[in-house]
Image (cartoon, rainbow, N blue to C red):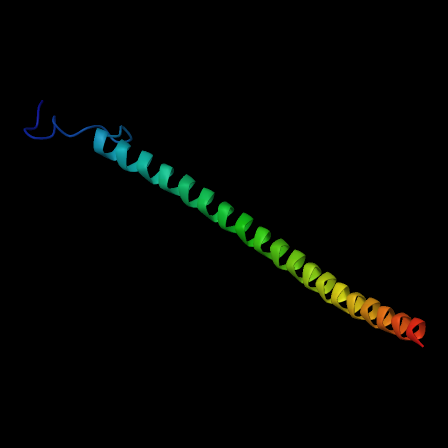
Length: 84
């Protein structure tokens, strides 16, 4: 017994090429999204580390400026003492 039109419909669970492509594309997109999210997290971590290093550099620059002023003041004091 044959029903017209039903013989052309694929069996349940057997993906047609278009269904397989949709699933494959969805899996690829999901993988790509996960990679992008991981890369964003890595970038956030690097940015936080960069900010921390920049804060350390700023502290060191400030400390160096203070030391330079101290050295300059000592140098002027020593020059005044020798000039007297």
